Image (cartoon, rainbow over all chains, first blue to last red):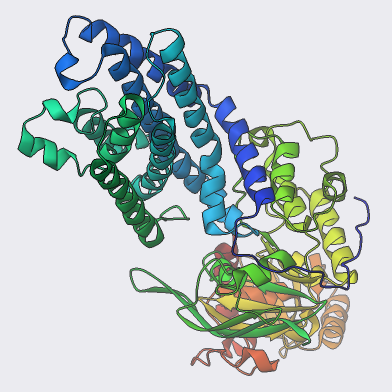
Length: 271
Length: 341
């Protein structure tokens, strides 16, 4: 062992800031990215599922006439794949990641240091969220280049939908981790939202083809607003009121899950 | 402000009515090493977590460097270093990656090499955390705790799982840090560690501090001990009468407040009677005595040795140890040893 520098007899400018520190987010995100790359199962699941979705939708809907719903097979395939990229890549992966970090005491350890609670959660979510957004971009470009989709009518809505969806599913993942005991059981606790969303949030079946009463219930599901924004981004032609409603639904769910996280998130394994 | 750490009437309850910390008060002046000593489950970790700001006390106040460590986390964190009882590192990161992550989260971090060198981990940078030995993981934890050049260092069982050499290295490092001005609060169940390292210590039992002071103060009130085996056919009853002896299966133990005098009496008696004392062992009072008594539920000193042990319980059996009848003393001691293991 060698000698250590003495404790400086100073208190240099250490002004606690309310804003997230970029250095800390980068440090946490970088470590988490390394872990994600080393966790082959999660990585391939997140990368492959959306591509499989595109292919599955295309082959199963090839003979269906979607013209009435104002959409096309390629459009459904690409928006559905974006939804799945968010659900699997962000939501499922992060439920497991939050639980794994909690059960191995990593969260507790991080809390002994300088990062704030939101920084810790954001840092852990950063790689998966970035990856999912990149995937959405690749899907959009691929849809245009390979599946002959027209360019998005309103790209800013597409972007808003993807970003809101990422934030929403990250906070929902943190909330879901509170009722998840082990990383393995995350596959189970994440399932309800994944199933309900893929059926009821317009990932593959446009809500406009559902019975009216069912459709109006489905409008309120967590991911419906996000998917409405994404779809409108492709097709354009949505009314401002609908778009506002969709954005409000997404924001309301974000607020609700932030509240749930503040209230119930666990930083310690239950002993 | 001269106190780095102040605890006043700290209590901590867990759900299910279990109270792990039951009214603890002590202070640690700047630049001192303070040890919390106790058996497993005595409440050491629960107490330290309150001071680290990981949990809010259910009653009482904690101050670290003049701040509430829980409510004023952002003000306290950059100035303290924490070593938890268990790691909490992602097992798939390498040592270097782990330190780099922590350094990125730390204001004015030391260079990685300096921290790893100080904890004897130089050369292990590329090893994954899951491939480290238990002792190496403790050193990594210590390296991270040192990274921010902390003014106050919390070490929860820093040498558990270390071999003798690693333990000694860690002690040297902790002393060097103290000499450099760092205040250290450590928990341990190694008596030797508390005795050699701590400037002051407190012994915890069932959520309370039952004894505190400098190691010398804590041991001063304890009896010394002489042990030996008598040859076949020589009953302990033949020993000089005034020696308080207890015999257990041929092994005799004498507890005494004046070791030199009583040892002289014993040796003169043995010499005059031509009796050989096998495995003769005489030792002055040690922390072990105090600790064993407390672990066995016989809170040693009813009277506080230092102002901060005012919460010591004064049960009916508080002062039992030094005056116990010979037979009881012997059997209780063996019980106590069980409790420590």
